[in-house]
Image (cartoon, rainbow, N blue to C red; front, side, top):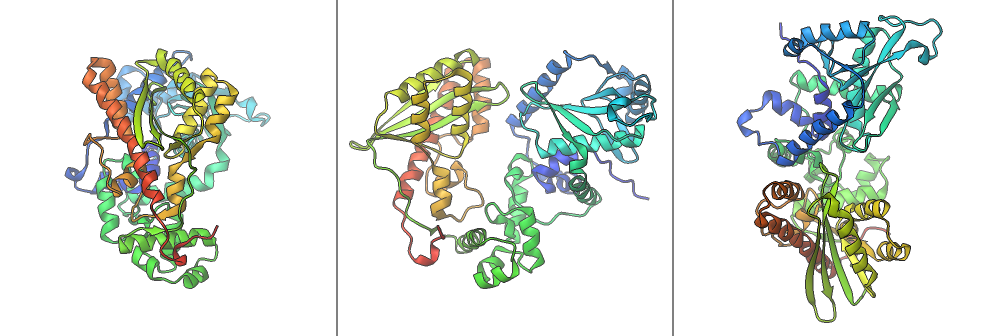
Length: 487
């Protein structure tokens, strides 16, 4: 008889990044597995530090030292502490093949559930679960892990908690109602258990695959069968609907008329349908489709803006700008670099002073992050309201400009993907935002000026890539009305 695979909270995390991660870990040749990106290790270590800091302010019991070597012993030790109503750090919850290790089990009086005279298997108290996360948002994978723990708790104590809790990166306690997620949880759980039992998920490529050690395999498998998931922003639900109507490849999609697609996919709005249809055609033909000519303002000064941040230290350490004088075509790069957290406010004020002096200008950035960080630093350190308005009224997101005006034969539309497609190359072979964080921490540890220069050069390449994309877009014009999306 085959032993059933244990189901753990980690499986839910991996599933949300990439469903194939689970299957590859169990059934694929492990020599094809790549190393974990250094930043992921840093985030993990940062999470452990945050967890320890949070736990210092709470009273809890830990399992006996010997019990941690064996899950069954750890579970029995956890139950003994639960009988006594103790708060427990890293207790082990088990029921059949379900195994969970929440960060904290907290005892609560049964009276708070509002059920008169009700008792749990432990008497007049029951337990709720907490996880400590370094992130700020209550993401779906966090919720599913907590629902998983709560359902095991229900089997152990005879009472289902109403809520589950996280302590986020800011130390804030946040909760959600477990019943709100039960249906979605069980659908996901059933899918995960099928994967663990050997059922390979259909090919699907998503941005989360990049965070796994199996990314190259995800790409090659999706490419080998030309799966529809190669279409940018196509969701797993979209893929399922397309499979149901006999469209499984980018070729199927590209070669099906819009009239037929509309009749088969009545729930899809026209803009979504034509976007995916155009994207499939671009991939099949391996050529771009130009939807419309972008309208960029004519100004004296163009500023290309990019920020480097370290989420593990909660610091925005480099605000980089490339300033172009459109009358002379001359460019100048400037960096505002914080050697540590204490200098973050200093570089912010220097950047605000720079902005205050600008007139007849526009700021280009790629994707939402620069706007998000600007708001964060403004709330943290303040700025004159007129300068804040100047920034917000004169910024253009080039990622949106790309998506609105062209269709490219790409699976993703990140700065790196788009700039490399049009011919730009970063000087550093290992260039990337995640690598920049690793370099920054290496530089702080070693004090090597060459590492600092590598970070600055990388940021300079980022803003130069942003400029290259803007100038490439300006040269593009639609070839025919057929390619133009409706306004």
